[in-house]
Length: 426
Ligand SMILES: Nc1nc2c(ncn2[C@@H]2O[C@H](COP(=O)(O)OP(=O)(O)OP(=O)(O)O)[C@@H](O)[C@H]2O)c(=O)[nH]1
Ligand SMILES: [Mg+2]
Image (tube, rainbow, N blue to C red; front, side, top):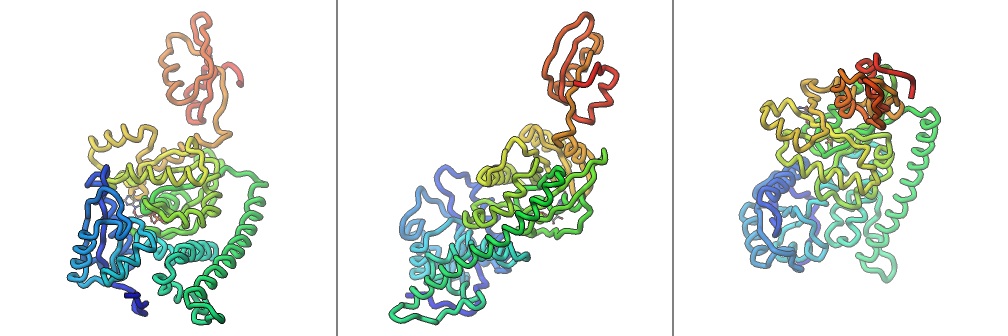
């Protein structure tokens, strides 16, 4: 059966996840729960879910035919009108499912693309999302044109001489892809000009990055006082916003809020958002926000690091803040987290905990903030040398009579503490 596109968008979703060999049950369940949140973000009702076990992907339905049959029956019994796969399924598998299960079938990537499409506000974000969607749709055209028909003026139905409808659709989609690439190129040139203008007055720049819903915009709002959009939803932010702030010592810093990441983020989206994100990723340093109240926070951190690496970020310039600390009052749990994220700072955009420490930390990261100093520390105060190793970077240590002469790089907050031992400027 060829699936006839319906004008009614699907409303009742049945979710399918797979626990592959070597995956833990807990991981697979977390991912399926996250899919549920993504699907709800799209406004669909979830009428059922299944977590299947499988050893390796099967060509026809991704999972075995028996499992597929059983799921299709369960989904129809729950009166679902769409099956949502947590794993990427190929266009051919998608068609097999639709034929066999008599249900529309989409996957996590398509859900994410749809969310992005609804949330994009700026011209650049809209163009980027549309490009990613078109590229996703091209190999799936028989299936996906119910999305394409929403694109204004795409002119379906104008079949050229000797062309099938499918060929016409493909030609139109390719033409639209070319046009989108050109328009995005133009927007990027404007962006590059703006950036060049900003670089003439070089102000240090930090970007806030992290998994979706970690609290990036909330922290940005706390730091800048800017009233950006915050919501308990995935992908509340799609556009980057940059604002200047003043650090406690009076120096300026530009701070950027960015779009969040998610596991199994469609590659096309990373590609098309690359330009927007690159600017953030190449800033002087990155503040990686982790939601410590989420049990999957370690996997979320890994995902974020993988995407950052793919975008060309220097992972040595990233420091981690553990946000939503207000939701982790338990000291034993905090100690466990502190062991797992040894350099991280506990903060809460909600209660304000740790924000002063965060501002200090931002100060320490400014390239010019650190000073090279030469100190003479009497043996009687030798414990201070250990402190130097902790707060700064010791370059050289030399014994000189009853004292140690140390050359070290110090962050500004340590200046007063060591002022009396200072010999000369390094
Ligand atoms: N309890 C608590 N909730 C927080 C904290 N920080 C943020 N939130 C809540 O977490 C949700 C997501 O916050 P956002 O700031 O929109 O998160 P984001 O990382 O910008 O999310 P995206 O833009 O969707 O990627 C909102 O409901 C916030 O109110 C915190 O420190 N504690
Ligand atoms: Mg946000």
